[in-house]
Length: 370
Image (tube, rainbow, N blue to C red; front, top):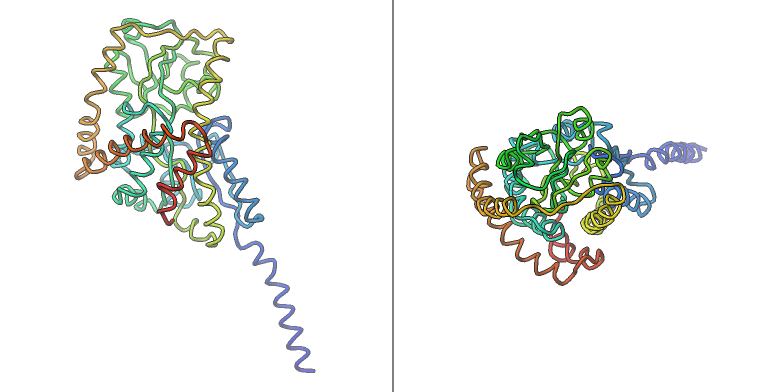
């Protein structure tokens, strides 16, 4: 009889424990201040989180909160550190003093011509060749897993623009010191706000122009207000951390689920890089149908950009030192070297997302343990 009661008690305890086991991994919260329509959400984060949830049979669920629903772009790194969110998109240009060495890589924006090349180069640099870059995130209790680069930035304005003289005195959205410096060199007035705030700023007359990817005409609805574009690639944003988690939150995920997430990460990154390129091509045709005029720049503007680009490596190094970084040359030179390496890789993969995913896996993610 005693044996019976003892067995019954054990079964009862097991019955109580079962729901606990099933619910031990609560959903993680992930913040991206960019709108739901942005490429980073559509091509990377949404499908990545959905696939991981399916493959782990719901054991790892990550709830994406786009559009700054939980925290804005400028508050993301502190929100991750403090556990207000489990993960999020950290934009280096909004956290120049918190992650100054990583910002130095973002400061090389004018070297970027192809988002696939830049994505491969920056992730290889940070994950495999720059322990100091990773340490900057660890100070904020954050695990860096990867980032991306946009397509080349163009100038998009309310009024017709084509020449250097047309741009003089115009208020330009130019995030960070790199584009702020460039806006000033153009004779414009730099305004450092997030791209998510740009539509309202243009509507209110606080901005005349946006320096950004052509696809933003659609994803940020800018073509309602900016119907004039100068077709002159002006570098691109890269760096920061699109995929980053609070250390404690990541460690709370069981090892097999973490492995599933990492397995699917290169595919998400590849889809984003290729998707961004596709969006630019698609939006260009749609923009013309909506009355957007895309003009070639005059020669003076083209010459100015060519001469300006030559000094960007030196400028990035000097800016990093002013932020207190010791020997930023090591990371900067590694990135420049990796740009050449990934130019050769992307020459082989082209814009094939499967081939590019495999390259990311072989060259980077197979060599990293998170």
